[in-house]
Amino acid sequence: MISKEKVQEIAEYHYINGKTDTLMAYSLSEETLNRYLRQARIYDIPEVDKSKILSKIASTYSDAELKAIANGGRIVPGMTKVPVISFEGEHIKIGVITDTHIGNKCFSEGRLFQAFEEFKKERVDFIAHAGDVTEGMSNRPGHVYELDQIGYAKQKEYAIKLFSQWTDTQIYALSGNHDSWFEKSNGALIVQDIDMALDNFTYLGYGEGDISLRGRATLKLWHGEDGNSYALSYRLQKIAESLSGGEKPQAMICGHTHKYVKIFERNIHIVSAGSIEAQTPWMRGKRIAAHVGFVIIDIWVNDSGICKFADTWYPFYT
Image (cartoon, rainbow, N blue to C red; front, top):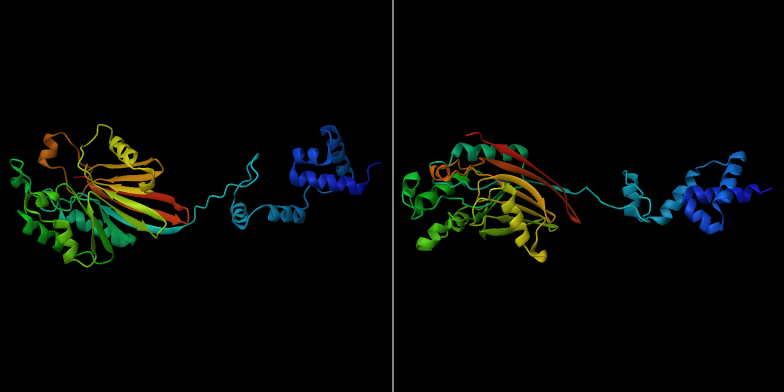
């Protein structure tokens, strides 16, 4: 007759550690182990001694892993540790606009101010502008007839007037290829000059610039001078591919093509943010569509970086 104490010892070890470990620890055959388990049922030994199991778990896992288990984490068969992935983090809400093209007749104050109203209602932490703040002036024949604000001074003053209406948070902005026409023609840095005129407007640079998200992740703004691609996601994929590993951000907001697209590539959350400017006659002539609208992005960051990401597209049906 097997003693009750020995049966209880082996049965409890089995309940806590599983069959394979028990067979190895006690040098038992599977048939012998099953005999011990049948005898445990005869002795009415409970299958679960919660205090011992909890004590065993507490000694095996770290505090972070115990917290993950308590929140529904799963001990995966074949793995000695529970995978600890925390989706809790500090919430950051970003209002996103791009390609306003202030100075072009297809720009609309109403669309910009409606974006501001939504940003205010949603209590964004800051606004990000991914370039082409102004229309600029090119040497393209007929371009001047598409403008309602002609010249550097007019476009700068109008832009300052518009952005001065937003006082709730900081605005971070790039200059784009249209803004750079003033620099190329006479050395004027129009977005930088808007920055100098407004306390809550920050110029990040030409073409690209980085914003730190609480020091734990990087958000990159990107404009570029390339064209539209046939597949909307292709341009964003190629931008992601061009970034070296050490410079790769965790999130990116893109302008320039006037398209709304969201992809996840190379572990980068990438949003192409459409445009505030409507489709221009030049774009229509080139058969280029415009996705007119703005975006609000919700990001959660923890010590590992971005742990959750959600974007909401607000289209204007022009």
